[in-house]
Length: 137
Ligand code: THU
Image (cartoon, rainbow, N blue to C red; front, side, top):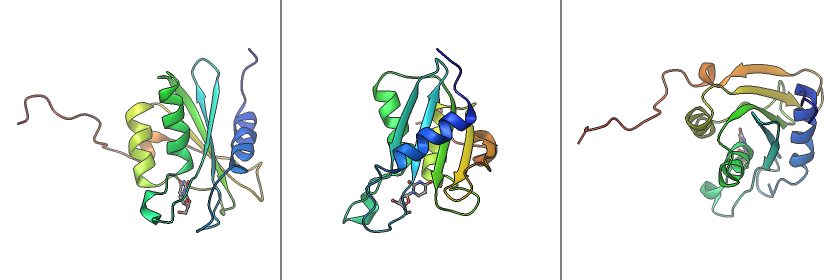
């Protein structure tokens, strides 16, 4: 399989973004998660009339990947029409750091998709809670 580039993953996230279901905020987000084996799994945000039930694009992609059996992840691309690209929310950072501790996070804006900003998931959520301590009861 040909190696997936940063640009390929961003383009996959833009395609996923077209499938966002965001009738309330109108803020469409796409995410594309790259497994270490070179597979791309995508997600987009899905909103609810009960707003708090909304699920972000990143979590849709991560949950899909995990339930398809993937466990090792290299990078995630996240895209939206947001200056500088959309930064993942705290809830998504928590899940990403738990399941993909060495993940690279690439974000891009719809208007200038060539300007890709890169972060490590560790810098986005330092000193994270990753495990319930044993014998802590
Ligand atoms: N959203 C995402 O999908 N990812 C993020 O990183 C931030 C926010 C979605 C959730 C909601 O549907 C909309 O953007 C507005 O918050």
